[in-house]
Length: 261
Image 1 (cartoon, one colour):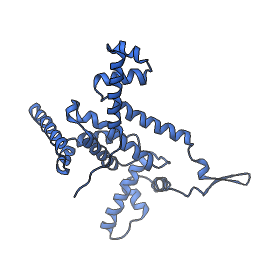
Image 2 (cartoon, rainbow, N blue to C red; image 1 turned 90 degrees about the horizontal axis):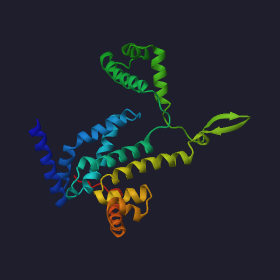
Image 3 (cartoon, one colour; image 1 turned 135 degrees about the vertical axis):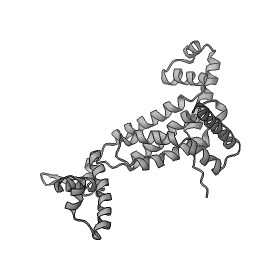
Image 4 (cartoon, rainbow, N blue to C red; image 1 turned 30 degrees about the vertical axis):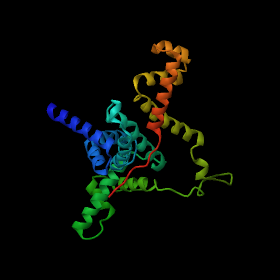
């Protein structure tokens, strides 16, 4: 087993060097195949924190992996897996922010509804006609009332017009738009996502540039004090900062995903 793992890592490094010097869709797809376990692991963790299907999260995660592969420099000395994590997480977080429904329902409701839809198709084939709701509920081993409540909960996730009236207070209508989360809360959520991506990128900097960036920009030390901690001159710290910032720009700058047939 150890030999196989070592061989797989060696093959992955060779492919990364080949792709870095002569990129192609075929090589990129081979690298994706070798690292699909990383995408599945991250998607699996997110699937237990949200209500989006695991399969959708996995597919979105692959876009992040592809972005990481296209920007990865094997000569820097760190592993692709560490480099790719912020990209995979970032793609999934953006997907959840842009596509998740505001109304969350219990996971059991979604599981029962999904199972009920499968049972409905199976019964339609075996009975040769659309099944009754009570027949679906019986197959699920739940009451008709619980099955109907489950369907209603899932259906209520569908978006409504923001101009629809949610309630009335002394003949003054309140629309759904009035009940939307404030911009401040949404900005805080986006800041948290960007912070996580920045922290991941900083962790992948070379040692000295990383120390300089953390001391000066995170801990807000002067360059003179940072130089004492690093064991260098302030001028050298300035050079480390320039290197670190350039690397961060490279890691965090969006790039388009190459496509091919």
